Amino acid sequence: MRAGAALAALIAVVAFAAPAAAHLATGTIVRGSNCTYPWRSTHTSASTTRATDICAGHAYVRAYGINSNDDVVNTGWFGSASYAAVSSSTHLNGVYFTTTNHKGCSTCDYNIISH
Image 1 (tube, rainbow, N blue to C red):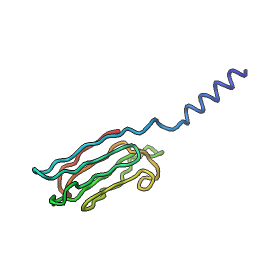
Image 2: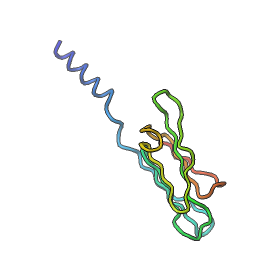
Image 3: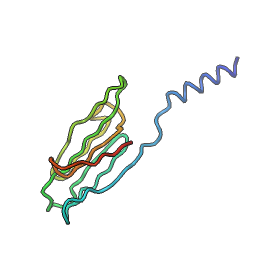
Image 4: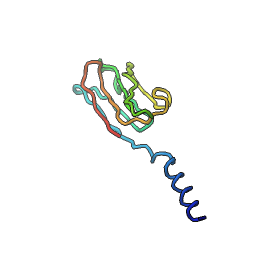
């Protein structure tokens, strides 16, 4: 019976272990000939940066996750003239990001990054 108890304890540890290391994705949105918006995204944070001041558009980011009730939740769009960021701990009560969106202006199309 000792082996059975050890196996049950091991299964419990595996079932409640932390998720694997966060998937890191990076890229750059290019608008026009001189406007770039580098972005970065993991399971727990995401950001978009306006790399040059000559660009008219702001940096925008939002993230989605699935909470413990299996509801899809999102941060809504965060935008700033130079840098926009969201974190799962601050903006989604610790829910890991499943998808992030990044764009370089309020009316622009956005990149979809899946985790």
